[in-house]
Length: 379
Ligand code: A3P
Ligand code: MG
Ligand code: MG
Image 1: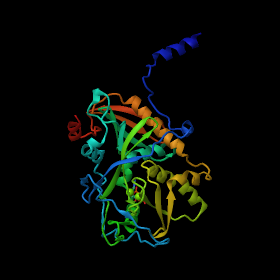
Image 2 (image 1 turned 120 degrees about the vertical axis):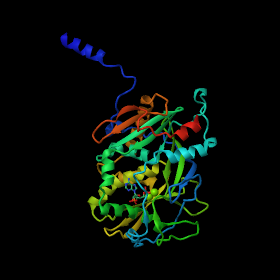
Image 3 (image 1 turned 180 degrees about the horizontal axis):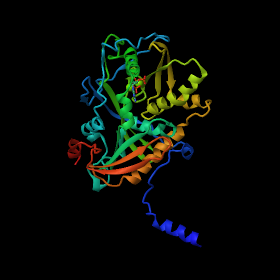
Image 4 (image 1 turned 135 degrees about the horizontal axis):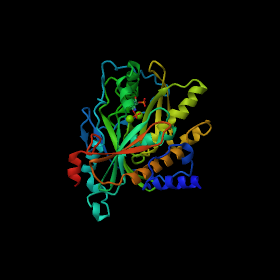
């Protein structure tokens, strides 16, 4: 009897939760049928120029040029003298997407509810890269994340906050690591032309401020999503499928020569490549495999729709359904938690490997990320 009594009082002493306080990231919880994921539709695009200025057009879109099978591209070339690096300490948050939304408001359907008449018909606005992090969370063992969420006129805006660990890593990168980051962009220069009938110009400057971004709309379960992601290039055939199906993602990776290297590539790298391109509906990744001196030895195409079959033979491998179900459940969790509709209120979702997702609430803090110009214009 006393035991029972104790149990009762413990139960009644607990605040009755309106919604859960945390979300598990344990893989086995998400091994169910693949959720609905509608074919992403491109609703627009924008460009960022060499000085990171926004343009509501596709001026930075480049064209994919088929390379030789073994091209011997020297990716170290130009690192010392033809490289302009974007300042990663400048946090742009969702600003470019918000600029795109303001410039294209008439293209977005108005919300039906009279209470939020100036809002639009989307549940979540975010970067593709933030969603990629969510998809890979059940398999991530090293890096945690922080996602700030604000509800404004019925829409949930999701913007990443750099963790202390990520900031430390960024500020203490080795010279070798910094050079290897350049290699990825240099590979793009070898593979892309600025004009539809042009050829790549590897004698030019690599400027990582420049970007072309697609804006897509889709639905995951009952979550209507609007997100943007950077696109490397497109098929130059004018009769190619409409965007995003004509887009090509470019990647570099260390050449694979042992079974262990192959297994690591399948289990970790292909997961990230798949998640990044599956989300916006980009159908293929063209990979340049390079040696330790940054020379591309071979080029191989991976079709996103074939990756899940490719990895099945690998043991302890990842499953697309786990990634998508976790993302869907996380967005449901966010909808339950984020109830106050106020541009100055931020719900900060925090996750670290081997932990559950938790959150905290911040009013008028440095976490607020919706700029005044956006709030004013949308009001
Ligand atoms: P690789 O992925 O070929 O190494 P993306 O492939 O997404 O278009 O990015 C282009 C390049 O930017 C990458 O080329 C890599 O060099 C660099 N890059 C992308 N994401 C990064 C990150 N999170 N940290 C460091 N470098 C990154
Ligand atoms: Mg890119
Ligand atoms: Mg790329």
